[in-house]
Length: 298
Image 1 (cartoon, rainbow, N blue to C red):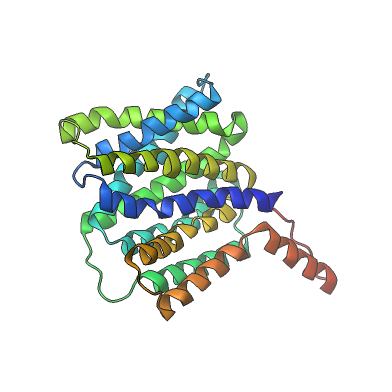
Image 2: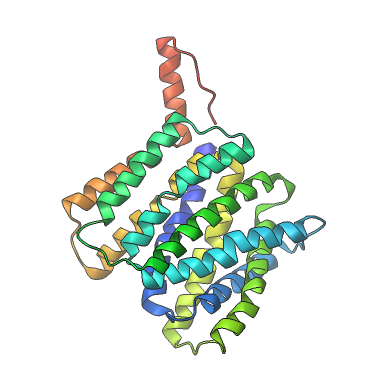
């Protein structure tokens, strides 16, 4: 059953892996706040129609906190990073999030990181660097800062979401976060960016994809995974994001993958595999047969 939840969770980073390309190619570059609001609000309303539940009690302020961390600030920062940094650099920075999530889960949830998770994160980060960082990439200081801030804020938000996940169902809490995050963004967008941007037909279609697939479906899958799996396992699955981005770029540009990129993807996939329940159970079986102490499976 744990493996099933891992597969469900994997939907999120695969969908997110397409988001950098769609944002960079089809969405207006100078409206990160409107871009984030247009992404969050329709997705939240769609999930609210499905769940048909409003927040109660403490979930009014918890939705606002999580919506700000996971949605409004995160979306705006990611939108800014996607417009000002090469995908390779932004993805490499985000690839460090499994380590940050594990450390936060350790301090906030007493969920001690496993050696396999830490080893998987090291392999994954090395693989992302090998896969994406070749030659000299143009660096924008604001874009780097935005990407780092997005990674840290979302990691805090994800761990808090896991901490509070037993209090309500996944679809409801995800919809509340998205709506709260979108509402927070709107006044800032009006004040900073002025009137909403004029959207072409391709931009509208791109926003539709981003809102439904890369937001509503992806975040519901991600938070479901956080509810049922250790933070380390979920964080490592997030490394499928840059792998998807590389494969999508290769398909769109009709370019052949290099040996370096193949090697990087192999390291990333090995790192992800190290953190999965099936690998933990296999290691436990081996220890049992060799007479070593067993480590409790997640």
